[in-house]
Image (cartoon, one colour):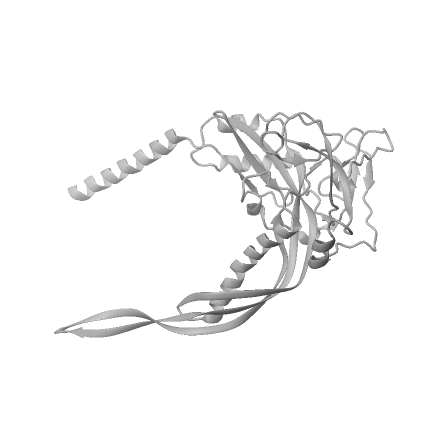
Length: 353
């Protein structure tokens, strides 16, 4: 994410990465420069223990100029060609007062798969499917200041896990009992203590390293086609913004372990078997842990409605849209009233029949 500028060999203007290609393209004359990757360059996994111990001393770092939003505290780097006057995360007007930040250099980047025009089409399709949205919200949402493509930082973690557990297996038993001259069916669960070990290898557990958006928005953009990652090259960032990570490597791994645990618990329940399962204890060992620092493509925009700012994000590869939306309580009230009327009419017809 260094402050690189790539001049057009034909007219001298700033080249920009063309989404969905392996080339830089001049927005004025159309001249293209291919991005040719070295055949010996690959996206490498880094040993977690080494990376954690040497992140400040030995791991490759870079210094970039970032700007900050005083409202949402987002920090991001903008391409020199982007003259942004608003925060891409919350829409607040910003003053471009860059400062230098040193951080770990990304190891890989997932290039944008489509341009801003296609992003708008996907967003408008999402808007059209919103139930109970105010009638004028679509008009206001379309009257925006344009989409901003932002590379968002992520950590990915690999790990081989072994988990020892103890718990109980529940078997449902149905039996018939006699109560005087009558019989009745009784359902009960019989519990048996059990213990064991399960193992699972995890590959590319993703953790968002940005805190600039409400929790969960970026998580719901998954899955990412990480198989299309390419070694980090500043040319893919030309014409786009980028963030530096706000969640550190160690904190990211704690989040990754939480994600892994939910899968491990499913494995444990399958291993216990029976109709019901109770897990009393679970101890997991992590071996061969590796990580990558990657940049993933997100289209950002926001609009104001009713004195509030509504932000949304679009997966720059799949087109998945997630975001905030206003509700029309008038429409909701009318819908509830319509349901009540329909129920009342049904009851009247039933009674009449």
